[in-house]
Amino acid sequence: MIIDFEQRNTSHCETGVVLNVMNFYGFLYSEPMIFGISSGLFFVYMPLFRGDRGVPLVGFRTFPGTIINNAFKSFKVKIGTKRFFSFQKDKAMQEMDELLAQGIPVCNKVGMYFLSYMPLQLREHWNIHNFCVIGKEGNEYIVSESLYGIKRISYENLKKVRFSSGRLKPRGKMYWVKEKPTSIPDIRTLIIKGIKKTCRNMVGIYGIPMASYLGVRGIVKLSKYIRNLEEKLGQKAPVLLAKMIRYLEELSTGGAGYRYIFGAFLFEAAEVLEKPKLKEYSVEINRIGNLWREFAIEGGRKLKNRNSVSYNELADRLLIIAAAEKKFFVALRKEKLEYIPDN
Amino acid sequence: MEAKVNEKLSDDTGEQMVQYYFDGKKWHQKWEKRFDASELVMTKQAQELEIIRQQVQGGKLSPLSYHIQANLFSIRLLSSYTGIPKRRIRKHLKPKYFNQLDDETQNKYASIFEITVDELKELSL
Image (cartoon, rainbow over all chains, first blue to last red; front, side, top):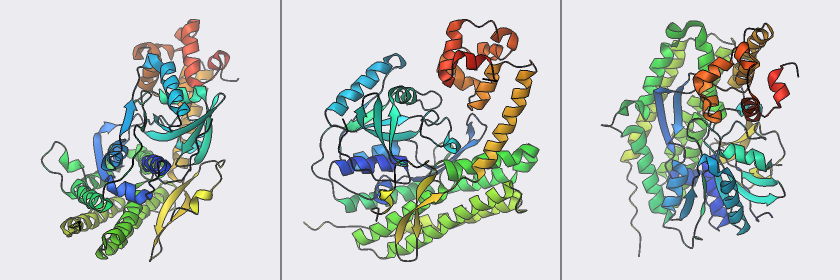
């Protein structure tokens, strides 16, 4: 049994799930629009939280899962969520089958390492991936994977992946749309809210613990860390830099990738809100995204000994990026975007 | 905007991802391949794995430590998968204690790494 489901590919898994599910219920929005409305752009540098491989946590997006929650909340779509204990594995699969039999696509939070179709380079013990299960045939499930297209995985594999272990355990988390949405709130107010919240995230967080590691100030801290990397670690420094760049640009959408999505969002917002000035901001954030991309490429070349860029120069590049982003978001925050609905 | 990109076949290797780009007038989507730093990390991991393989064949470490490195596990992660305490897993890294394991624990380890019990015991298989 397969649900009639139109698959669209995206560059980020959480926005992909929201896009495909909303499209299934008859409301199609583009990926940048969903990303902007749920204010997904962010920067975190957390030196105290090390992964299992000793790499400090660097993120370009909000906490895993918040994009999905914010998007469904702002569209006023009611979703049901369920988690299970580890001894309820069979029950978790059974409840998913019952929902599928009613014709409801069920989204799952899974771990990435044991997924059978994942390419070798991407295999990492991360439990932050999302996809949408759209059917079952015999012992196989059909999965709408928003990064790579429609795939098939076996019953045992899905069970293992849903109950994978490590940080941020998924615990068989599944979520589905409870009530069919009939109407959507005015998109223009949602866009303005999204832009304002993103600006606040990047330049406006003060007065909470570790606030200086969030937003643009976190980029400055990261550049300081890279500047001292060789003194601290010696021979281990290149490998750690490689792992960091891998996390930044290759495993997920990446710092540049998120900026490009945000730029596309501003461009669309300019047309919806009829504020042509937002298009200038869109061009500017594209330039900043290119700077991130150049940083990753220079770092990658250094690791292969193709150029002689020092750690200081890499750190200086980050400082330039931080200054440009601060200027950008402060200006965008002051922009007047008030929209008065005409009754 | 997203219509053309989505006509991609579903049975590719998954090395490509969607990327947005700006051509001066409008935003578009395209497919892009990017694995650059990953190669260096993977070669580094292969080197570490080779060192451990030699130690296992020399009798200094047990085959369990080889499988932990090959699957990018840490002891903490393996402990949370199996429910076996961390210090007992560290004990099993030594060949003397690994050879005394009972069937239940062997099956546990083998099912986590998705191999048979015979493959768990000997590396040459």
